[in-house]
Image: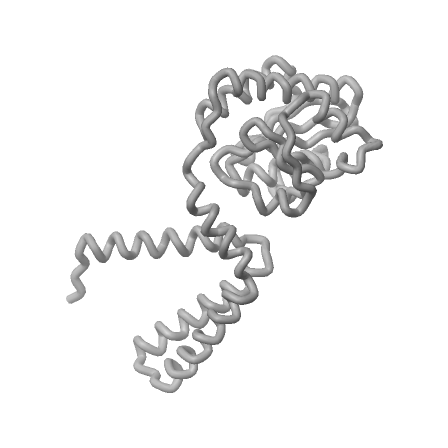
Length: 248
């Protein structure tokens, strides 16, 4: 009869967490195919061990060593990012109350100007989950959050107006970033690409995303895969402050 101790349970939970973390981190990247291959080999090795298939175990063990070496070589950058993300995940970036107030005000002021001018915008505000993979898909920046700067970025004549911007702490750290589109069938045909991207990024991370519609000028706020539409700028400011206070 198999007996489990508390150490065995902790061991299983830790391994399960690591598997979940890497699968979640590599989701949607080319590395996921290699990870899938590794898990298939692992499953074959378990089957060989259960049924004592010596030849299968020998072949799988040899392939496994080669596969892991190839994985480390090809995806060393992704592994490095995953480890960095593991170190920062779960810790909200600390922002003082007055900084939260100023940040929310600059974003809401920018949203109002963009709304009045019927200029589309997509603004992701990072919380606990780091958004480095999306920053690297666009243009890296390092600028203080400012309403006029945000408006100028999304101006139709700006080379940065396509895609979204990413705010980390009190700084704009990325522009022209491409976010994953939501595949939620309940969103309906009235949702444009910006709104689908806003919902999509908040489905995959815990960030919040402000969207300004180019067609109607309406302001929306997405969080946790949900979207609240037609928000007034002052109400938007309050919602941003509240969500930043909760830290996710």
